[in-house]
Amino acid sequence: MLDGLTPEQFDEWLAYREVEPDPLERLIEILKLGFVAVCASWGMHIRPEDIDPMAANSPGQEVTPTQGAQLVTGYLGPARRRGHGNGDR
Image (tube, rainbow, N blue to C red):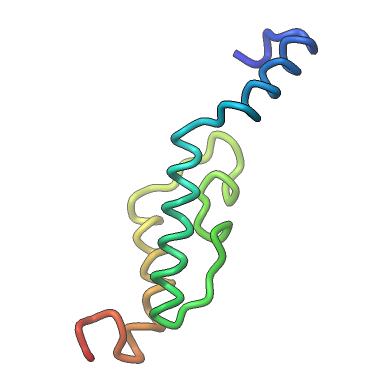
């Protein structure tokens, strides 16, 4: 879609996005911040950009469910070894 726009139309689209942001993008940002907050309470130090699949991969590359599970397990692993996050209190 964006490839067919003139520079003027693209400028208008950017201005519109500043006034009316995509609600899905906002939701994704809120969820990333919430996940980071939960991980911080478990003693893990990650940043929101660390869990952004769009920033981590080149265009056209997809993350498989197995790769996603490995990513989450990698972050949760240290907390589980310390006795956090698995019901031990």
